[in-house]
Picture 1 (cartoon, rainbow, N blue to C red):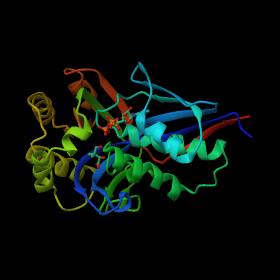
Picture 2 (cartoon, helix red, strand yellow):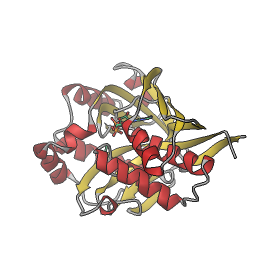
Picture 3 (spheres, helix red, strand yellow):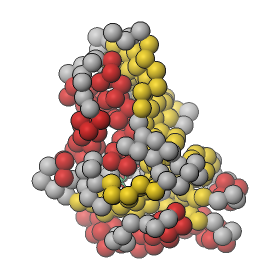
Length: 281
Ligand SMILES: Nc1ncnc2c1ncn2[C@@H]1O[C@H](COP(=O)(O)OP(=O)(O)OP(=O)(O)O)[C@@H](O)[C@H]1O
Ligand SMILES: CC(C)(CO)[C@@H](O)C(=O)[O-]
């Protein structure tokens, strides 16, 4: 019986999305396209009598995480959980979904729950949808690459383009609470109308579609607009992080251009999905 298990899930930036509301969490979520990020969340699950969650992200430490606590409750287990991420929370990196995937995967191992990856993903997706924290991130994070989802739920991915270990630079000005946007009918109407209606052909096409979506969705703030203009002037492919007040970009000079506007997070397009990293007896 292991004493602790460490698992990892990549993160995910949506470039564009549209919400799909079904009758159940299984058929509720989003369609859209995004990049799976090698910087995601690493979670250590240790057996304990009471549940305690420590969240370490972007140099900050916080206690408690409603989605993780909900996941453990639904599994009927208690544990000490430490989640670690180099990226900030609430800024469009799909970290709630990544932390759920890694936690449930590690809990499955440590408590011998015999769940398959579909069952793990379904539980993570249901909690995301029911808590209003995300729509399509779980499905995307099940593998790497440039991912396009054409149906809601965990099996909605129709295309995963392997773009290699492409470096991605990101500047994040402020979080945008996902719940606020998803629960504002006027915002969601503009988002729905802005949806490009097709999958990207390649990474360049992805940035073009994402940018068109960002411009017409009404989500671009003045500061994001300034950063995007600087990227345009430097000939850099860039768009707005959904949902966070920030910009992600690719290309050799992306980091240098973005660094004029704030702290730059340097990550890569991931080449794989969630996995167990370490089992300690
Ligand atoms: N790394 C993490 N570890 C544990 N809990 C997390 C983590 N990231 C997010 N959460 C929890 O998920 C909930 C929703 O977070 P939120 O949706 O703002 O984060 P996010 O997934 O990083 O953002 P986004 O939806 O913009 O990608 C919060 O209650 C937060 O505590
Ligand atoms: C809603 C969202 C843009 C941010 O969490 C993402 O979950 C998605 O693409 O569905």
